[in-house]
Length: 267
Image (cartoon, rainbow, N blue to C red; front, side, top):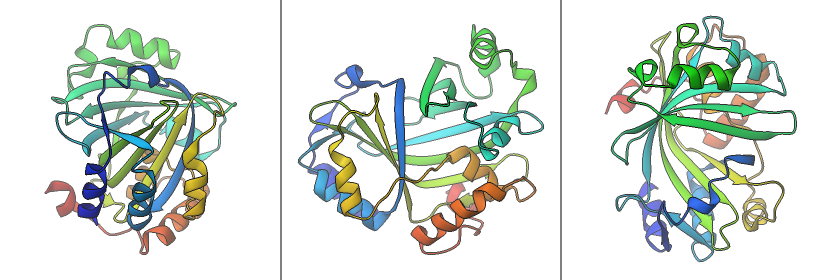
């Protein structure tokens, strides 16, 4: 299936990071969808003459590694679980296709369903707090949190395709082969056949992909890599509000998501 995905991407026109600079969408409205790899192949077939594909260092499928930080009592996880309209996440993301470029990022979602992301480049996950200005950045963006208040809880690795419509009014990220490792429990999981699609645009501007997704029976569905990853890898966490979502993901996937994929993650 991954081979079919790569073949379809080769048929699309490339776009560089520099050319995408006008559509960074840092203050944006996000809509997430969950699909199978089979549906992704169908989607790419329909979009191949309507969207550019981002290319970095001759790569159209780029690997990412993201580590989420939280408090000892999992404050940020519980904000999401308990459906707080205003919530935030702190993470360190490494772009593995771009010389291990690493950013400390704070994502804040408000009660208008708009997401604001602020980030700064850091040395690495391990030396994040040693980077000049990182402590001040964290305090300002989280309203007072310090690195001593946080620790790594869950890490994910995934492959990403980034598409941009020809009008350059939106960005579509497509994540697959998502794998999780929980630092507190040591548990590994992966999402097997699942694909997470995220439409990113400023406000409710027209999006040509919405009707295409609907036609192939892919509908809006929330998916937080942080929270789903934590729920799948730590059964001691409160997760009643995520159970229905996980069952839906398993239906799309075609099997349960309980298998330990330690070998797959480490390979």
